[in-house]
Image (tube, rainbow, N blue to C red):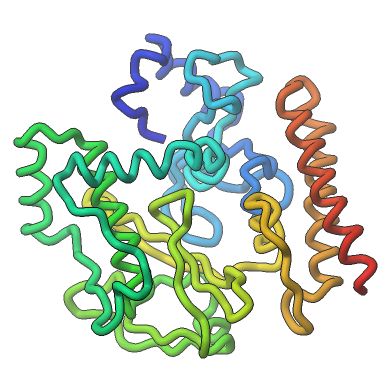
Length: 326
């Protein structure tokens, strides 16, 4: 992932060589993530290879180097992992969550923007329009901010925070679907024709009673939530003008269980989707993942081993809880 300007001095001078050695020497150009990203979208080693289309999305894979302890100064090989941008982004969620709220607020204020009021009662009436940040006017505003002394991080952070809130309070969803359109329509989604002026998005009606919510730990993610408060569709929108893109996918039971455990939220079951047996199966699959990691890459990493054992215990508790309900 891009190195933030304030962190550049924390990396060794030969970081480009170290990173290349991990990505293309040890990893052979393929993502080394074995599931530690906790996305729950791949079994075993992630199949993504640098420069090739990513599984599921088709976007070009950019192989990066992750610090497992989030400490740039620690460049020991066992602390570094080659990861595609998707796995790296998810792996960093805990670290990002600790600073995201303050960073968002600072970015918006530094860019001279009023904070966006996210309370539902303040967004009644006409849906919010999603700004096309690729338009010349939006780019001119960005350049003006730069001339006034605002940093790229501040300007891009504000752009992405606004984009997330505009999407959540709009009547649009991404045109690019990572699952079959029929699967969305079976849930009750109704799609219109992609916008001529901004084909990245399409008018869309949600299933009855479903709502939208912004992620509380990242400005590029939001969700469509069902009547039981469960995240059923994950929406990715990167509003930054230099790489503007969006897509969405249907959340699997395994992804839902993983998210609830990660967020320390209760798991809500039903009779058709997240049944008690489906939850048990998802929890057992994650326990098996933890066991594989403990027996492979985490064997020589005490910090990660502790984390994985704790994670396994959480999934074991979930499995035990819902086994009694089956």
